[in-house]
Structures are given as structure tokens and as C-alpha cells.
Amino acid sequence: MVDVLGHLGMALLWLAPVWYFIGHRRTAALVIGGGFWFGMLPDIDLPLSAWVDGIHHHGVVHTVLAVAIFAAVIGPLLGLVFARIGTRTDSKWFYAPARERATAIGVLTVLVTGLAHLFADILSAPDVSTRIEPLWPVVEGPIVMVDVLWYQSWWATWGLFVLGVAVNGLAWYLTDGRDEPPAGTPVK
Image (cartoon, rainbow, N blue to C red; front, side):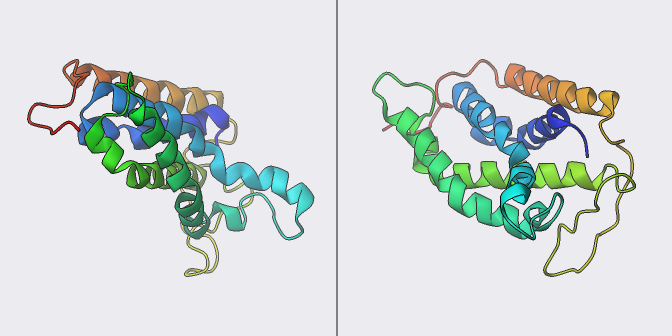
């Protein structure tokens, strides 16, 4: 497992397509800036393990099922926050067509960042940390691990974070400076 910045960097990488699909600089920046923090969500098992018997790091919370449940519960709340920002009269951050899909955007944001976390854990340190079973309960036991990111590697952690920031910076630059909805988009 990479350190916190590595997980956040992986979340940034996985969220980068938002720039293409939304195509509106401020809305995409809001989704990425508000959403990449959920890249640490599966590590909620660290504090939970102190309070709940049977919960351990890389356990049930590090599964696609748990991430999907988090997305179904937290995603609509995040979408509500996005939509509320967009309904302010002076707000140009979350434009109308995106506001109509705010719940779906919130759910996808939490889902994608949670899956990014699992992917980073699959790529790192199966020999040092507990192996994750991301496909539980469908597949028992760990899936193939690719030990390419070493546990708490400074290079992997900072490399992922810098790469995530760079990819999003490039995507921001390539959105043609659009701070208004793309031409032909109905505005409500």
C-alpha cells in the first residue's frame, strides 16, 4: 500500500477523465477537488478496527462491495452538495446540465476514487501488508497482486501524487479555457 499522498494521487488519476466528460472547467475542478479526498475512504477500516471486532485493515472495507455501498450512501450526499453549490444565484461552479446529474456524478466520484484506492493496494506490498480480497464475497481469497509499488515508498507515493496533479493540470489546460457551458448546452 502506498502512503496517503499515493492514494490521493491515484484518485486524481482515475478522476482525470472528468475533464473530458464534463468539459466545463469550474465544474470539473469542483468534482475533482471535492472528490479526490474519497480516495482514502477504504482506509476507514483503520479507526474502525479499534471499535468493531472483526474489522481489520485490508479486510471487508477494502472490497468492491464495500466501495459500492459507500458510493450508494455517500455519493448522493456529495451530489447534493454539488447541486446546492450550483443553485446559488452567483455560482458558476456547477453549471445546469451537470446539476441535473449531480447525484450520478456524486455516486460515480465516490465509486471511482474508492476503486482507485483498491487498485493502488493491489499494486503494492502484498509481502508486507495483509493481502486484500477486493472481489469478496464473489471470489474468496486475494486476487493476483502485482508488487510494483513498495510499501510506503517515497518515490511511488510522491510519483503518483505528482503524476495525478500533472495529468489534471494538463487536462485543465486542454479544456480550452471554458468557464461557460459548451456551446449549444441549454442553460436553465
